[in-house]
Amino acid sequence: MIGSLLQTQDNVLVQASDQTPTFSNMKCEGDCRYIFQGVCTNERYTACWSFTTDLVETDQLSRVQRKVAIANQYGDLCFSDGKLCVAVNLDRFNDPNGNADSCVYVY
Image (cartoon, rainbow, N blue to C red):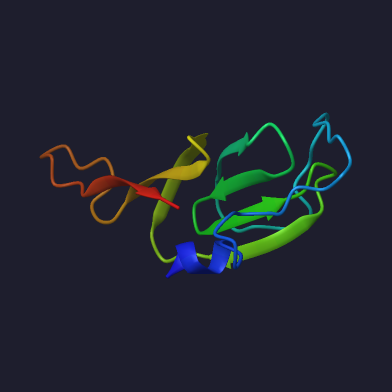
């Protein structure tokens, strides 16, 4: 499961460092296939990037800490109450007959 791949033994995405991090002019390292969907930070020490088929975690200097390939259509994401929330579509994306299977994964 993706959630277990993103979590550390202390059940947080990244351990805090002694440094006071800042986020500015970030660019995700490496290449990801398909479409960039969104980026968010926990406003302390990590940023998460959503691509159609990849979820990437970077530090405040944009260095990749984890990259997880995903099988479904991931969309935008945000941190809420210390958890990462990602919009996901599991089936017929933008189906005019309402057959899309959309939900939010919480890590």
